[in-house]
Amino acid sequence: MTFERSTSDRMKQAVIEYPKHLGLHIDGEWVTSGRDVHTVLDPATGQSLGALTLAGDEDLDRAIASAELGFRRWRSTAPAARAAILFKAANLLRARTEAIATAATLEQGKPLAESRAEASYVASLVEFYAGEAVRIYGRVLTRPAGARSLVLKEPVGPSVAFCPWNFPILGPARKIAPALAAGCSIILKPAEETPASAIGVAQCFLDAGLPPSVLSLVFGVADRVSARLLSSPIIRKLSFTGSVAVGKHLLRLASGTMKKTTMELGGHAPVLVFEDCDVEGTAASLAAAKFRNAGQVCVSPTRFYVQESVYDRFLNAFLAKAETVRLGPGIEKSTTMGPVANSRRIAAMEHLVADARAAGANLAVGGERGESKGGLFYRPTVLAHVPVAARAMNEEPFGPMALINSFRTVEEALEQANRLPYGLAAFAFTENGRRQLLLQENIECGLLGINTLALSAVDAPFGGVKESGHGSEDGPEGLDAFLVTKTVHQG
Image (cartoon, rainbow, N blue to C red; front, side):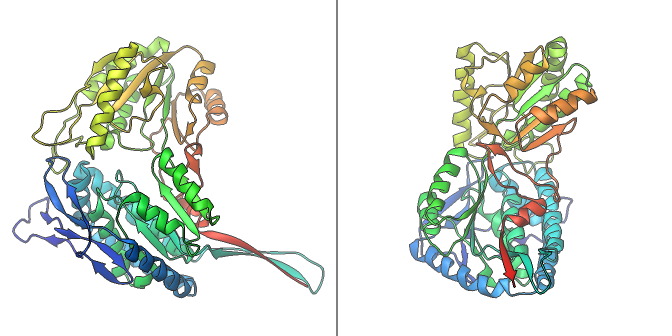
């Protein structure tokens, strides 16, 4: 399954033809017909992009059997050989950036510049895990003469991973690359809203020489797919990125066979802004970050707590930046914020705004749909002085919504930051070194940005605490998530 590049347009932006028939990859076979289908929609227009073939029970059983056979072969493949395939896949990802990024923008909606940056990051991530494939270390423990103890790291086994739609290029690669580096086979279920991105990523690994049985790609009704795959004792690992509610459901399914799990379950990121920071510059940077990918980012800054003495300055600067956001189809160069990915996000935004206003919040900007013909556009929205009881203060909006309140003391700010059961990302802006140490020690989160909005790096762990999940992706920790420990005692 490939993307066809038009030869009629050699301008700065190449024209990519979106695949009309998308399907499953099981044991080296692409299945694109003879099953139920899902219609993939362009969120910018509401028009059909293509038809996606969905897996039935027999397909899922074939994928499990293929993963079992693929694991036996792949775990015995030399680490250097595994690394070579990953390096080649990274090179293919770079060569195919335009095709994969354009597909991602068409089916997910984000601006093309964001999709290109995502694809570039993914190539670096795969390259990192190519290097890690040859750095799986154990240790030897000192014992009396004639005896020794070994601590070994081994691949956990056939794995299953579920990806969301918000980062359709990064999500699949974040699952596939560490699993392959560790020596595991993997069955990947990407989101049905964004299948072509995942197919493009998977094709790079297959074209790099990965044995076909090592990687399967399935789509289908979520409950049906998860129940079938996670009930199998052959599957030894689950990696999931998505909502807290779905994550808890999958954990219950995985517990039946005590599978190893990595859960990245989103959050409701607090932002603490202190009076000693560059108020206007910080506000502008935060507004740009808030409306990236239309706010559909699990680490998106959302609950803003601004020190009372600079609250008005911050709010005015934030609003000024928000009003410069240019809404439109992601494929257009002038667009800085595309549509939300599906109608569920529109409904959620409308409900949360209405509830917040009823609770007494001030709608400073936005709070309505953008003008379009069939597209899923929602204007950048800022709510000020939002009561704690408002649903938006307690439920992750996962959309272009910023909630801006004030605080007086550090203790008050920390109390609000830690108030919710989520703990994925948090941000703080202050030049006070002692205060920075205090925040490092007391904010409950897995990812903390102090005077920075960059929370992802290929060599650094990414994950949350509390109900935002457990385990980490990226970095050496992402590799370790696909390994198990064996201790050998020799006398």
